[in-house]
Length: 512
Image 1 (cartoon, helix red, strand yellow):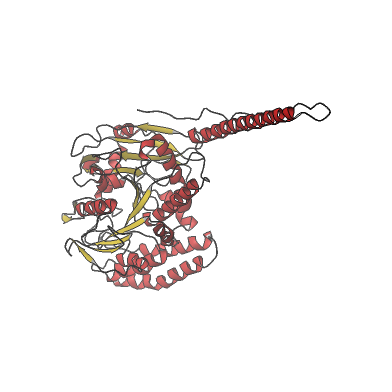
Image 2: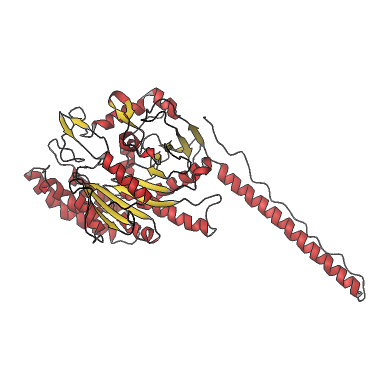
């Protein structure tokens, strides 16, 4: 069902209360009975006055809260016949929700696609999945591996045997504004983007209040390693405020239980320290000798610029932006046809971006007019899989140069668990660069289920409070696309293994 939701209530005008004074007493000393009657009357007056004030105050506070709660845009539909599944029709909901500051003249609207779990959807854990980038659509996650159907050639879709939605509900979000189908006023940093996402969740749960009690898991990858700790921190801080009665009117507790991040970029120093090592001295060297020599000359400048930016109290936009541009230039060398996402694969000759063909398939799918109509997307909104404007704004602000992993400490102490699962064949976010900021993991590797598949390091009971999993057969998109055929070369990622990892993690079941 499509509907528009607009606030029509306006706060009531303040009421003017007249003071109700007791009648003046006659001269002389009152009798005992008279004094008692006056005291009873006074008590009645005080009680009635307090009751009146309480009713008046409650009415006005309630009216103000209702005005705040109800005043947002929502255009929601239930797509049909665009996502075939293994076990029959998919039950899903999609559309736009207006965020704080949204208006018809200056829109700020997040697009989501919510897939109900096949089993026990009313109480199933909810996994929220977002993209990386910065500037990557979150819709690629369900369409490449996590959802009930997968992108296929010519903008079509096929059922997904390794879907996460068999037991869990999946909430895919185009985050931040400006990616995918989300449109309107953009932000330029992960903290403000996290505040937008929190605003989205509060409104989503007002539309679907029965889901607010379900276990909630944050999931991201790549630059999601910067997004996720910021989002989790905002949710945790706002939960504390709600519990203390200091939350925004109408806000509810979000049942954040854990975080799952694949191949994360969470620390600029660690990321760039190991980036060239992977491209020049990895199992499959991607840069040639001259490029490596040139880039290694720039590496100390990159790392010094990061330290220079981070030593200044507060946030120095100019320093961080300059450091980000300098360090990002380490990535612009010629890889001679090898993909950074998976060192075993060669670029698709039909895609100059040297990205997986599934990206083009997904763009074709979301570009179909019948798909946009089914999802409730206005005709004038185009799908943006990789947003250059969003990346440019985040780079200009210096968001890339930060140590977001430091936010994990308070979250872990609060009992919010963290999983890192990493593809060993990734060159974009080198495994060594991820492990270097997980250096407190001193526990031994445990095979899963055999050493050639993956190894696991766990701190804590069950699936762990802090867990690292290295997937030998996975790349940057270790969860994505069960079979890629690129230039007649066949290479497998690990969607079935990752599904098993996710099921163990969400249910907090030991990996061994």
